[in-house]
Image 1: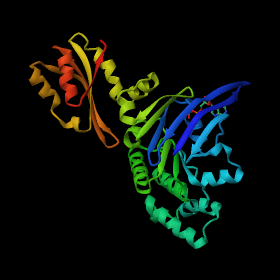
Image 2: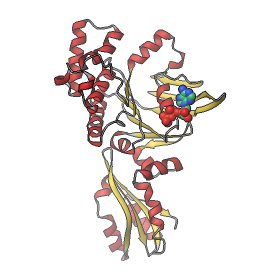
Image 3: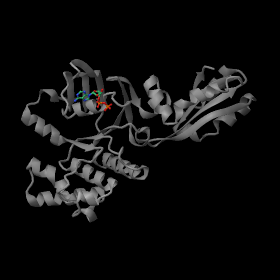
Amino acid sequence: MISLHHLYKTYPVNGQAYTALNDVSLDIAQGEIFGIIGRSGAGKSTLLRTLNLLERPDSGQVLIADQDVTALDAAGLRGLRQQIGMVFQHFNLLSHRTVAGNIRFPLELAGQLSPVEMDARVDELLELVGLSQQQAQYPSQLSGGQKQRVGIARALANHPKLLLCDEATSALDPQTTQSILALLRDINSRLGLTIVLITHEMAVVRAICDRVAVIDHGRIVEHGPVAEVFLHPSHEATRNMVAEDGHAAALDHAGRLYANIGQLLRLTFVDDATYEPVLSEVGRELDLPIRILQGSVGRIKDRPYGQLIVGIDGELPAVRAALEARGVRCEEVAA
Ligand code: ADP
């Protein structure tokens, strides 16, 4: 649905061209929740903002539903932006308008509905985000989570096909973050809306994203299904982010501490394999002890996973074969 082809973007900084996007190509499918992660200054916002041309790339194409939006004229661009909702970290609400007034604002700008139709649409959106009771309140009377619900309702007002989220939960406490993520998931599945989000919170990606791309110094350094990228990060930038998050990839480092007790294997279980007594079966079958040295278990979106570092004293190929036959991915960890 969205195809980015060879995007470049430079900014003039101190008289020099600073490259914020360096040959970025990506495909994002209709109906998926796609995360973009990277350290501060990596180019996440610039990339997100090229999707609705708030930033215009210096070169390259942005195809949305097969249309090159970089070629649109002013009227075409206005139409495009109505098809793309955006949610911001600091909500960007109009302080002198009520909740209902804020949600109504983009409908007024679009100018396609009568006042009565606008009221009905606002009611629908209030219901969708659970704010019917607060419709007459002003932003200053709302909690952060409620403000973001207004932001989301406003972004959805004109039935967009695509929702862009710029650190949408970064200003919220963990509990409120969970409720906003649940709302985004719900909207994604109920409306079939494509969501592209940028975040520095790995937990957000694990909770709701289908796929993720990692940007570093303006380049996409890896991308793929979240379970693949987070459990088997191939680039250092990804490993650092996932490790800081205290999850799977940190295990490699921990494993080294135990290097003197046999060979090390990193095992990854996903989906059904997570629930099977695989290790005890294999240990019994081959009659050897398998030591669990480090591990994490959890969920990536709806997929359960476990990742363990184990120490093996016996024949590694036989252990690997027995584990792989049971659907466990095995990688040797260098001591
Ligand atoms: P991120 O969202 O990953 O923190 P950004 O996309 O905001 O990164 O920025 C990428 C790089 O481009 C940063 O080094 C930033 O300083 C620079 N940059 C972004 N916007 C501008 C701008 N309008 N003018 C000059 N430099 C910019």
